[in-house]
Length: 395
Image (cartoon, rainbow, N blue to C red):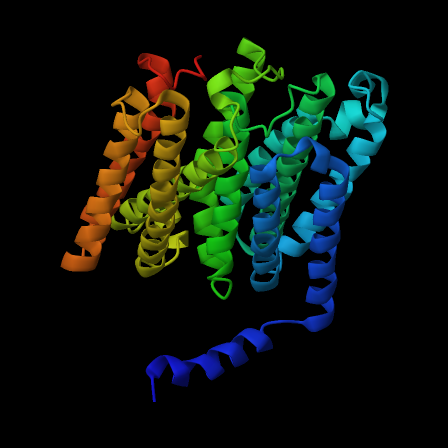
């Protein structure tokens, strides 16, 4: 018999045993009802591509919620808070200053500030958990995870509400908020946090893995939060502006999120690599002894780079298709495109060496850490020091 045919029944049985029909059934129903309401309320403002994207998101959310159940309460809380915010606005953007709930909690600016505070506190608690002992360690780890989930929730609420606020500015202004540095830094913060929570959950039986991954991964998130706060205050970047013509495209809804899953994964891999190198260089230090085994860090590094590379590849292809539509050519050697290619080649080489030559150890970790420098320059440095067709997020 075909090996696939032999394996299929056991795979389906495993998948079914992982499903809780009642709880998952309510979740699936909620996603379907939410999608129908979104279509009924906003369908008139959507073109065919946007309706197709909405339809495609539904099975993705269902699959995520069924096979990683913490997504279910996360999405339920985000939906409840976002709907409450939309109801409080009553079609008037001025109510963001008039209504206390909007002003201090649910407007996009307030929700994103709460995200920043929660993620910074989560980072502190992860480090207390990593270095603490006994009851303090247990309490800090519990708080760290809870604060991280709450930070992700508030980031998503802020993103959803900002999307609504952009439509309130005018019928031709509304767009998904992933178009400038302020908005994509919010995206980076919650995506990277969610990725570290996922990889930590894969090692739930080893509390030191969650502590170690959280402590190091949230360092890069906190750095992004710090930049976001500076950028918002120094440049008043939280304001919503109409899109430039080249960004007014449905391609943005696909290209940018895929790109930032890649960036978040590469950042997580680099922080796992930093923990690995610290453990190898100073094995007797208190931090090194509190970290998970080198094999766990190496596994997270490999899986995060694999995931990031897959999404970054998709994002690069989508970007080329978008460029052909916007500028008449798939590739123009613009600085952003050139550095995206450098990042892609770097991680393609890393994965090639891993799969073909069995790359492991300190050299692999150092390479992954250096890769973060190239990724950071492609993400931020190009906007700081270079100019080109992608100059939409200057400092």
